[in-house]
Amino acid sequence: MESHLIITIGRQIGAGGLGVAQLLSQEFGLKVYDKELLAAVARESGLDEACFEKRDEKSSRGVLGALQGFRSMLGMYNRAGTDTVMNEDKLFQIQSEVMRGIAAQEDCIIVGRCADYILRDEPRLMSVFISASLDSRVKRIMAGEHLSEEDARRYVEQGDRKRAAYYNYYTFKKWGDSSSYDLCIDSSKLDDDIDKVVDLIKYYMKQRNLL
Image 1 (cartoon, rainbow, N blue to C red):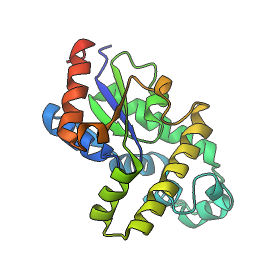
Image 2: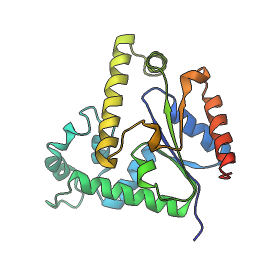
Image 3: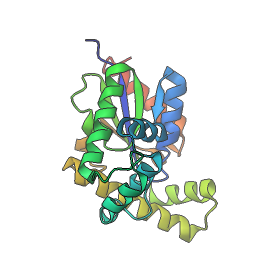
Image 4: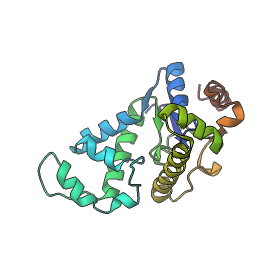
């Protein structure tokens, strides 16, 4: 069976990872799975998409903290109206199966959600992690979210902790550690220019004969 090109992008808050995914999408004509992945998971499980948004890695309650009370929340959103309990591990399993199904059907880009780990056995996987200096990320969040410097800094730091907790818990690896990815890029060392980040990713992929 033909293997597909899968690009996974992990990223620190405010490092420009989603922008990189969008540029790669335009360059190669690949679909980006971010929020779309939540919808796919919802359809697969029969649960309301809002349930997954509440349990997403960006949840304001934090991933591990949100594990408490998860049973009652599922009761609210279960479309079937049953009292079937799906714990957080089952939810992760469903999400993982959806990702594997996507990877088996098409070339694509998947942002976040431990995709690099879940799809680690894909022969044409390209896993990337985008980081940047804290000051750079705070400035980007201030501009993009219209926050004060103090609020933007808090947003970045809290978001990073949640993403790290989610990734570390489900992969038994360390979020952002270079050994977890094919390529790690500090976008602030490239003048915060995501076009340069994309060029670097493309060069690396050519060296690996993925293009």
